[in-house]
Image 1: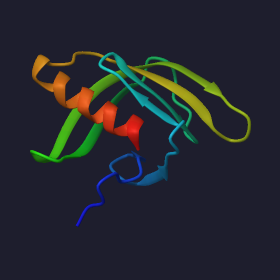
Image 2: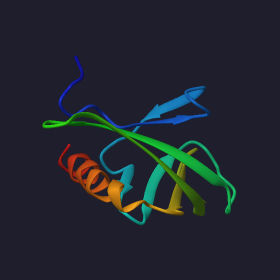
Image 3: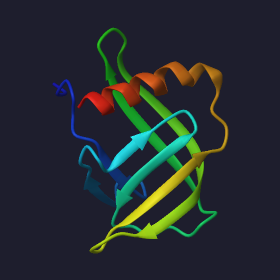
Image 4: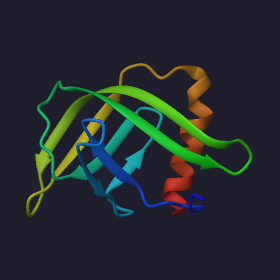
Length: 107
């Protein structure tokens, strides 16, 4: 059974490496996402993101989004702040992404 509000996590290379995220480490909107991680990405790198979310009415929702890294700067310690701009967001994914973002902010 999945928890109602599981902790966000980032996975690199289909799960070859992963890390948990705190509430301030991840922000998602219809335009893109900002996240803190231990990984450095070159500007212009294309990244595919899989988001999963347990919708109370619809069950498990999965979204795959493609984006491009537009910002990646070191933070204190051995982590980076990265910003990913979504390339194309189909209209049918917008409501699910908004719900995911609201759930993330509430968690």
